[in-house]
Length: 320
Figure 1: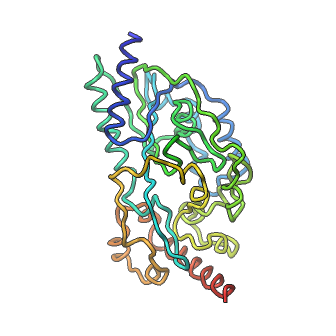
Figure 2 (figure 1 turned 180 degrees about the vertical axis):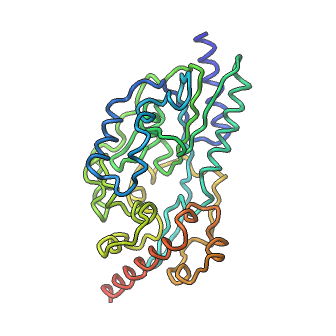
Figure 3 (figure 1 turned 60 degrees about the vertical axis):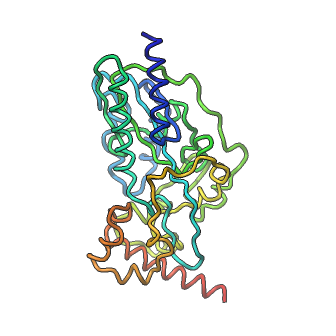
């Protein structure tokens, strides 16, 4: 039986590679008290800002077996969106993950194909639950336990040869597969470029983030209007922020690049604040539908654009 499970795991890995996943691994759903403690510490210290949804469904985060009865294996996968991008100075920036089609249906579609293949490869019926940001899982923790990556000082998962420009997903399976017998070593070493280049101090120490200071949180998750301090903090970032990833040597040296499913929306590259501020509801939909930007809505996108326009005006004035 153990040999059959090992053979099945090997076949699953091959299918995952064929589907374009940069990494795949397996872990058993044993208690993870340290990971859960880190998560609850963030909540208790109010480092999650106004993301109140993080305070909910704690029992399921602690015990993923509540998501799928008879859970035996968590399959963790990563897929790269590390494509080349040339941006111009003095124009707003959009995080790389938002310049392509929304990753949720892409990753889910690939996981559906993988699960269908697993059901064919398995010698007996099985049940699987696909999750792509859709369940309260401690994703990075299970990915580490599965041996596919290691969380870096910027709190992002780093996968060997792929870096951190990654989307994660999982399949919860009611079939036992051999779990990883190792964890990857710390990839950061003495490097602290991400901490040094975070302009808002969101990375308070290696591996610890204060989301309320993070530009990605401010431009994507925060629903209310900015305070003057918050407006200044976002700099030239219209949506998201990649600064801690741009300076990371792991990304600069990555040999695994973006999956072909992620096609760059060129019309969004180097878009101006004037263009954003002139959008109507219909033109906003036409331009951003199908991308992560669409979910924040036109009001919040214009809020971001007004702040960025003011920040760019001030920075250009200082250069004269």
